Amino acid sequence: MRMTPQRQLVLDALLELEHATPEQVCQHVQRATPTVNITTIYRTLELLEELDLVRHTHLGHGAPKYSVHEHEHVHLVCHRCGHVDESPRSVMDELSAVLRTAHGFELDAGHLALSGTCQSCAQETP
Image (cartoon, rainbow, N blue to C red; front, side):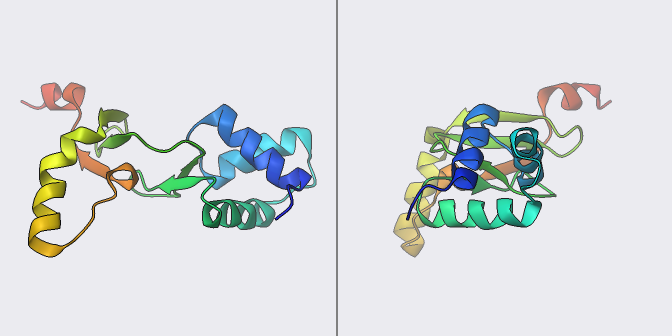
């Protein structure tokens, strides 16, 4: 595969944005090249993911977030305020071992988002 200008623009956008939806990538790319449309962004992200150059994570409802970096953390998403925090992947080690032993299942913890209530929102609850 050759590196087209559009593919390079998408990779550059993800490097700068770190975690971004396709729409955010498109807005970023369109600053430099207004003629690039959202369809091109989706196709490029799909191709880059097939080539293992980017990954996506679902952080709750809505569009997935893409990143060029391997996720060395688990995302913690507050279902009340939407705040996203990170925890080391090692917090999932015990569950990973149980799933492997009981089901032969290999957990991809870097692709995982856990939904719950953040500390701030939990403290607001009477």
